[in-house]
Image (cartoon, rainbow, N blue to C red; front, side):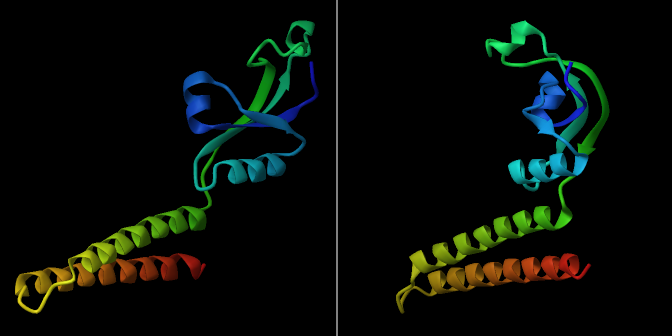
Length: 142
């Protein structure tokens, strides 16, 4: 049996298969840092465990080496600022899509209805940009 080591796993793999993808970390903090790099803005699990050192697992024919013992299993939530930045990027992309749609319409002088639609798209994109700025102002002040 190996000494106690920290392992990390994506939410789906742990919930449905009880499998941890990355391991051999010496400290909890090191495992959390690696998990945040691997799955930025996502929920993941960490666990402190000892794995089997049986000869049958040494040749690499097994996909998963079982834990002999485990303790300190924990669900790690994403850092709020990272999650908010991802949401902000999504809203900005939506705003850019509205602007691109407006630019494709380019009304001629006789197409009054298209001008109104362009103005409406411009206003929606502007509102989304304001929402993103307000969200980031509220969260990044802390």
